[in-house]
Length: 575
Image (cartoon, helix red, strand yellow):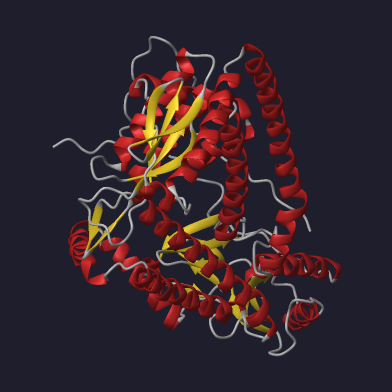
């Protein structure tokens, strides 16, 4: 099965994303610009604290139970609250001290001592932190002394690693490695596209594409499936570049530190419950996940109904119009029920949307009357079915086949393979000729004129024979020939034939005209031009002339002569 190549305009959002994915340098420049913006706006950040999410028992005013100590963007361990200081303050102080030690000193001596029966960790003789029993309980260790021993080894290892990463040799080696990873990502980007186009996409299209698509391209996927396939490819490529960017930034201490800062700030802004709907607070992340699930529900409903239409209903023997009507009803039913279920699972009270519904009602009353009318007309078209998908209709000056009946508009493909989008309400407000309604068998009329010298019986036999030899003309009802009357220049006949394919009317008429002309020529029957007869009535010859006319005809006029005297016989007597 062939596959189609989908191109996106760079001016559209999806096309811009697709363009960026196809050109890895765009992602590199975008990443550098983002890092520069963050560096310029945020300034130096020394506290690198990662608070743990609060438990359900905690109130909004109480601080979190623990916070993470971070060095160069790497999480070392978590500390707990004490009676005098919170976990956030402890983690912030320890992170600042470790960052200051890495920047100012080369050698590190980390040990712990016991002061007032509490273990205290020292770095190069200076105080770093006190290990409490709450810290040990947080790490599920038996005693604070054991926890102090573990943290001493961990801090020593991390300080040495941080110092090593700042050496010139390690920086150059990791820079070369980052360039190699970036080039490998470009190669994988192209390989993913080729594998998608040659293997995965054709398989998915073969599974889900219905058999009632475009006659020129019967394997063309539906719009929803096409969007889903492109979205999947975009997600895979985006995940690749996101992983590569995170991996490269983690190679260097400075970029790792800023990457950690951006991740923490982004996560806090997205996960913080700051939007109240009904009786519950929702975060931006939860709403984004809900929107993604709703979008996936719409796409999944389209795929399921498409599979039902093309596989189950098609094999069950339903005609195309019935399949489309059933598929539309099931699709919108699945979307409605699935949306209600998702909102309920997400804890969103539907009564909280009353304000939104009232605002939507005002909008409908002010400016959305036409959309509402078209939507209601679409429901009427689906249930009443005056026109169905696959019907050949004549609408105004256009003739074509109904390809799709949507919620707002209907697509008609003309005989020139041009798609016309018509609002649904126009089908209920204007007259529509549906050649396929209930019974696709229809009769077409072919007017023919022959000369007066022709035998009408012979003409009738010729026309009947021509229509019977055409493969598209039905034998029952049989063709008929009507003698319409005597025209100004011809004997007028009508050939009436029945066909079962209304969309083939122009082709059948053309074939019959060709055949009729050839048969009439072979039989010597003339198809006349428009004729007019001119009759001239005869009069008295020769024409008698008066004496004055004979005199004028016999004499030649001379220049300078005066006007001849009138004939006394022609002049009236003087009074």
